[in-house]
Length: 125
Image (cartoon, rainbow, N blue to C red; front, side, top):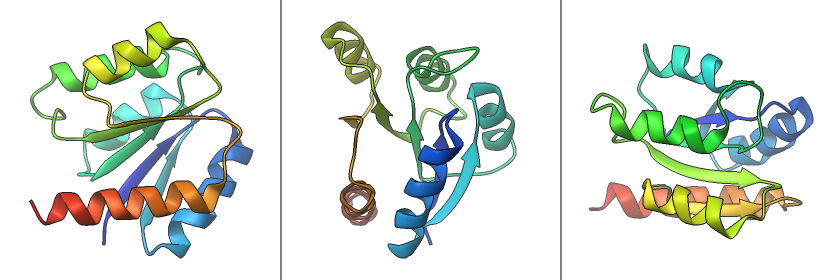
């Protein structure tokens, strides 16, 4: 079973998206910010992280940079789910290795399907 870490300061976003991801047969862990997420990945392996950009503390792009610079975590696939529309920020995230950038509002079932297909494709490589 694939393990997803969902990092968003909005409990509503986490709850709605988690429900859709679980329906796709994915194991979902929630984190409210980058610090919470870092604590989790320091002790657990995950397959994919879904990050918000605008969060308290480190924003999602800075956190992505931190993860990708650390050889212990650089394997983690990262998707962004954000209300941020900045082309510059999106380009920076892609340059850091983010796989997908999705803007809010979103359809939870569509994101869950995209995540599932991505992970199934990655596992066949």
